[in-house]
Image: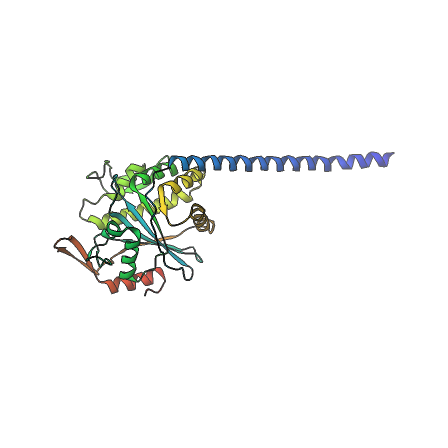
Length: 316
């Protein structure tokens, strides 16, 4: 009799532990369901918000990926409701999938370039004449740089994406007072900028540095946005941001492919971003060309050699 009582008493703690274990598992399962449901709802909200807003997708024949490095042509345009536009921002983002190193090379829009099938003109005119494919071919012919994918965003859509990702603004150290032709007035100093203000900061060029200063600010903005995407405080905004990005950004990737590539990059840990500008210092001169305007004449071979070393790939 005493032995039976002892057995019952010894089983009680075990049953309690089992009940606690089931309760904890149920709680965790509910948390996962709630988070998943929230993420799906926010993702769909972002998709709906960005419906019918992106630049039309274009035919694009990217280069074949060889090795661990993939290069993405990133373009920012100001359509203003027009069918054709020039690219205001041109960058090549290079991702080493093995090391997770990310490198960003900005291309000055006034580089004087040979455009296949047309006369020589400013580099950003290639997009106006033949879209992303002609711009890709122009860059490839000039530097031997393989371009595997592209992404285009209109500036108005950029503003909206920033506000979704960082509702409280993106912290930027504004290097000087600026207002001319950017649609906003900014004061010097560290401050949180909303989408419209951040775009204005990135586009400002009415100072002694001109377009070179603008490119430096664009790179500063990319760095700040990378930090916002990886910031824990913005985790709840990411699903809506990803959904909206699929509507606001035009790319040769499928929707699933876009998400997969971003997740691959982020899942590998901290993303280090190295930046440069083409042309490099000491490799260019300015010239006013009839019918073209003020242009940047570059030493192609010197910049090609630098790009090869910077990106860690051989250029043809």
